[in-house]
Image (cartoon, rainbow, N blue to C red; front, side, top):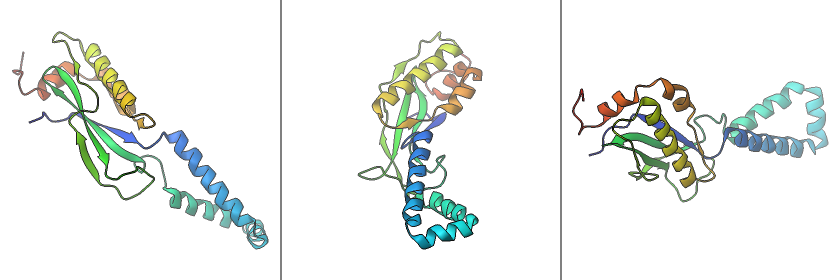
Length: 175
């Protein structure tokens, strides 16, 4: 049985910037296509609030906000003995496309090869190894965005040695 995970790292279909660029292009195309009608162009000139209302409708039609809506998977980080490992969860389906209906399924007990953590490693060293592990995961998931922003903020302040002992069922407490 695997030890419990200590952090879920979201995997996005694409980066936030790219998502909003694609969404903006979609909206501009839809608005310009509708403006090609003389009637719609005149309607927007007389009712500027309606164009903004249409833009909002198109933002929602495209998929809304990037955060949470574009998550396609997770890496669940946990320690196994003296190693860091990340279980891989991904949305179900043959192709990963923009969608609002997601079912996540387990894809494997590891995404990248485990990394060994020396028994005398400092908190800083353990954090560095966790970051390196996630960089290895990025190499496995080309064209995907792995969001480590929470880890980057919290990581320097965590007591990784203590967390590793808590997550490691084979190591005695207090050692």
